[in-house]
Structures are given as C-alpha cells and as structure tokens.
Image (cartoon, rainbow, N blue to C red):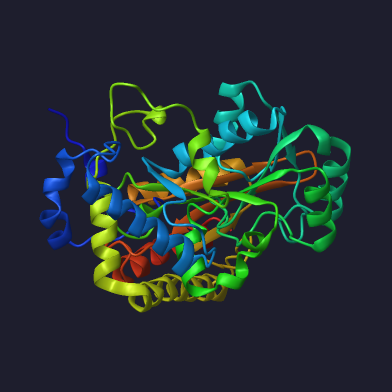
Length: 376
C-alpha cells in the first residue's frame, strides 16, 4: 500500500459543489436506480423538476416541461449538442473561441468535424465582434454550431464572445445553431447576475449545458437543455429492449447525482442558492483585493468564483504549482498560447463546497503570496 499524501491536499482547482452529509446519506437508495429507465415515473418527474428549475427559475428560458436531458456531465452534454447540430444541419464546421471547453474539441474530433477556433482580444480576453462577424460571414453556410462559453473555465469570465444585434442577424440569416456552454456559469452567474449571460437571449439559441454538480449535489449530474422541445428526440432512436429515457445515449445513468442535487435545491430554494452564489463571488473578490495589495496581478478581474493569477512564464507556472502542492494546496495551470499572445497563470476556484471556506482560502492566499513575492 502506498502513502497517498494527495488525499491530504486542499483542492483549490476543482469546480465541485456542496452537498451536505445528511443529503448524501438520505439519497443513497437512488444510487441503485437508473435515470435512463423511462418506466420509473418518480425519476421522470424528478428530472422534469430539476430541468424546469434550472431552465426557468435560474436561466429564465421559459422552456416547455421536460425540454432537456439529465446526463453524466457537462462534457457529455456538450458532445451531445455538437452531435445533434451535425445531424440536424448536415454541416461540418463548429465555430468556437480558443477558450472553449475540451469536450467541444473532443466532440469535433470524434465526429470528424472541422473546428474553427477564434482568437481573443488581448485586452478583454473575448473574441472581438468584428472577428466573429467575419468568420460567420465567410463560413456561415457551413457552420453546424456556434459554441459560446458562459462561465469560462480557465478564467471565470462571464462569456468568451460578445453578443450584439449585427451578429444575431448573421446567425439567423444562415440558420446557425447556437449552443451555450454554461456548465459553470449557469448556476453561479445565473443566480447572482443573470444579465451577464447575454447569449441566453439570442434567437439563435438552441441548446444550453449546465452542471448542477458544480454548485450542489454529488458529482455526475449534467444537463442539456433544448430551446426547441422536439430536439430532445433527435439524439437517436431509443433501444428496443429498454423502456428508455434518451436510452440512445446509453442505458445506464445513476439517479444518485440527480437526487442529491434536487434535494439540495429543495432545501435551499432559489433565495438560499442565490446567497451561496453571491458568497462565492464575494470571497473571490476579497481574495483578488488581497493579492493586489501585495502586488500580485490577475489575468482578468475575478468575475465569478475563479481567481486567475497572472504569472510571467511557463516555468513560473510549473514552479508555483509544485511549491503550492508541497505546501498542501492543489492549483491548476493557465496556459493560453496563440500567435498573438501568451498568457500564463494559476487558477483558484471558490465554490460552495466545504473545502473552500474562509480559513482554507486565507491559508492558500498566504502561501501563494509568499511564493509569488519571493520570486519577483
């Protein structure tokens, strides 16, 4: 047996939500029930309740009941959205920014789609509207999907592309499907600052990814929401031997992650969840202020719960991560490399989970400040 010291490290990089021990224990019977079983009416109703709360109460999309799927993760939801866009449109291009989630990259590779990644502006780290317009005009007739990230994984910014009327017009003229990957931003920004998610107002919007488990509940609960209810039935034919609920995507999905997320939502209600989201953002902003007082800059201001600390080089990134690891904290690297700019840094994430309490954040910041100041 090995001595796994990593289990004692404080995880400051995973976007994992909060779930009380009480809820984890009370929902264990659902671990042996299958979300893909369409004959289990209780689970069908639970899925519809979760989908309705996220789509209508949090994101204000006002979707038809049941217009979505409860899947394993946001990654699976993103891949399904890409596959659906290819199937419906018959086109072969997916347009993204360089900041899109790796699951979109993986989906394009698996499906043999051409992925066009747009560069970001060096000042605001978003795709310049002119760049986006030009790409839409040039490739519009062949674009299966425009993927927009809301709650950018690496930086925590609200969106990686700017939504303006001129862009919307081109999208509608070319019948381009818009997918919003709000796996992280859906909860933390949707609850605390819904106006920040401007792409949810697009008339071209077709699908949205949200991960409840990044905010509440056990790992393993991702949602894919459909603006057009009929799209839910376009993912493929159900298997003939199983009374399935989207069994075309697989006949095994544990009900436990859904049950824990829904139990936490029922317990906290909208107002309680909103307070949690505000707390995450407040703690991140306080951490930013403390770092700046010691001369440590952020790549961009803390918008959500992500604190993207700016470093000078790849060597700095590796050294800071290794030194923080030795001092008991796990952090993730930020390395955004393009022809126009190189961005290096490390990322802390404040989520609702117990581990990111004020004491641990304070100790992590103390260690990070020591390391960064010593290496100036």
